[in-house]
Image (cartoon, rainbow, N blue to C red; front, side, top):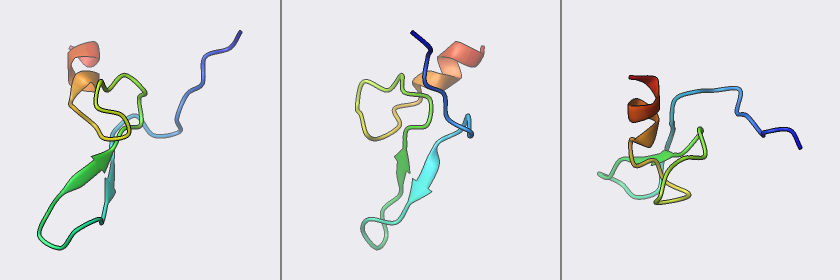
Length: 45
């Protein structure tokens, strides 16, 4: 089976609450799905 990939390899910034920053996971590796937890940084190093 093929692995699903995103056209973007960095998190997507999303507006949810005023004054707060949220990032949608684009790599699929985050343990805090749907939000980015920075796991992609460990994979790129």
